[in-house]
Image 1: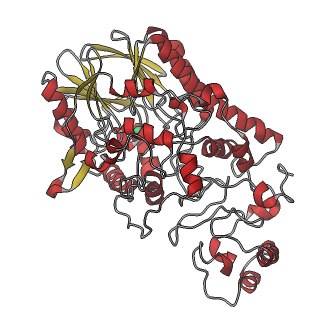
Image 2 (image 1 turned 120 degrees about the horizontal axis):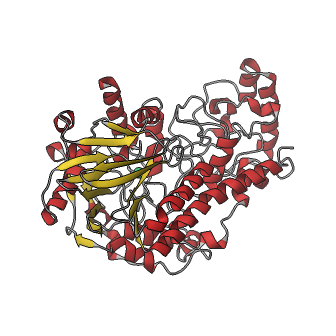
Length: 554
Ligand SMILES: [Zn+2]
């Protein structure tokens, strides 16, 4: 256990790319077409987001003018001043989409909030929320953030405005590290060992944390740097928001394993006099995750299964691919079990929602969001369309697309469709015999040199290929030469007809490249069909470059 804990902590420190070298590319102005596109809301999205803004600040008890949390030696851990640019300008600049700008301003709200009597949240002190539930003798803390320093600062904020009572229990809603590695900022291992403090988590939480963060830890850390943009400067031409919060804090990580596990699908428990009904939701946003209902407070914690944006079925960092069908099913179960007796629903990112009817509408539309993406993808797959074609064809219906809480600030429909194809039909693009054995990029020759890992010195790719590769590769090389002479490939264009991999600029030398739709068995976390460099997540359908050769799985 000790060794496991150390491994987790080391990898967590790397996970969000805090130690990776910065890139040299500088920020650019938006070109006119991008600026025009960014200047307006998408026509499918409601123009009215007043409810989102109202919910994001409702119940505010207190907010510091700014937060500047430091670690050992004055090391910066969390600094809200970096996002002051969002306050200065209410309308978006040309470099940022209008909808994202509004969402980013809401995510920048920080402070102590009253959710309902006896439930408080500190938001904006890390990428996730920390929640405090008042028990008979102390506080039950839900999801103690990503850093010891930010969790401690949140508890101090609570104590400034609410009664000072001890922490008597902690709940980890799921295995993702942004929800528990700050735990030693609020309690000590000795308090847990002595039985003074209980820690409750879904069964298998530690094992899943190891599976996700240790086995493929280095690879995931590289990818997370692209996903969260931690290395970018903050600003309208840099990092603006992370979709589920501003960013990941960079403080001290810690681990105290759970003392009690929720092992049955639905389990009731009383913690410090407060009644809880836990609902396990395995295979949703995390491999192990749980919601809980507080019947006496008419409150529902829906963990990260429902949020104020479209989540990821497949994360660019490479976490285990998620099952959209199971996700929708467990939201549906939560609606059936709890929504009728719920006056407020709160989440572990973003802001709560109040009112029985509004809550039911919100949960149903989030349920339908994941179900629609899953079902439509499967329908097109069964008609014979490959992943990129499915992704281009599927758009949300107006009833779902108009809602701000379904907007793609974090996950996207396009990427999530590919997640469904990857999870449902592993290796689904490798249908032709010649595609079964995809090749490493260095075999692909000199015209790739501006965007691929440099080729080993050799007289030329064809001779190299003929010497070391199979007959299948020689055939592909020949095709490539005939294509490349006719149409030189721009650096940012879609893959050529011969290409089985969506590679592109900005991949670090020796970086990651896998075939689209091809399950990468080298990663413990499961399917990760795409390369990671910016611009690579959206791999192209074949029709733009393959019109004469592409038919659905023909
Ligand atoms: Zn989270």
